[in-house]
Length: 286
Image 1 (cartoon, rainbow, N blue to C red):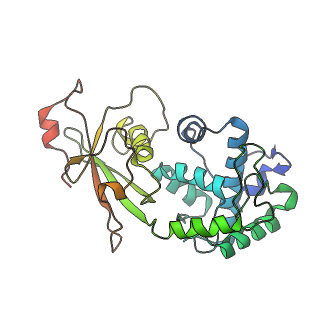
Image 2: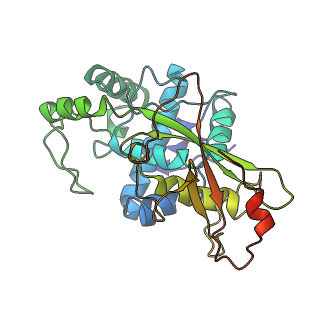
């Protein structure tokens, strides 16, 4: 059990589960949100992380396992997406916190009614003084049209939100696995579920290099060391552009039926110092 400290005006035990356990956050998540992907400063990162913990406590209380009741505000959603790039650690955190259940992510579930319901329940759970409107702002709340004091990001108006929601209708999620096979070892696989249009592969590739390629098959590591394996990623035998800036739709990856997933194969480039032709032959075929 963690010791009780305070964040702002809120005690940390307000986000613990019924047995005093906190929602586990990997160390590398701060680096991804602050330095690599989102460019947040330390102050806003702390706010967003606390909002993420509040949201997970709210999902636990409401038993919103499938994501059909609640919707995260923008900043919380960004933290959540980055956490999902560590799929094994995310699943472990959920199961430890939610007594064996995993919180599903659904980027298409946002609606004005759901946003209002989420904000109302969050305020009821934590109290109005402990709901930071720089984080907990939705298109239909009373703070719309104002500016976040930390990021300078304009909060959306309701009419803008309607347009945004319409744009999101076609942004379905796609599921894919990345497979990496080393010589004389079984393939190591990591699964991802991302929006079809709005999330480029570079996020998943960066996480995969840390969690699997660097640490070895079936070992998860949050290391951000410089010794990451050089890897190339292939979909249907075609190399995905090196910087990974493409989205799933741009390479022809679409949602599949019956919970099937696409497969991306990770390989060492031919120029790698430890390149071995026999290793190349053992790569898992799509």
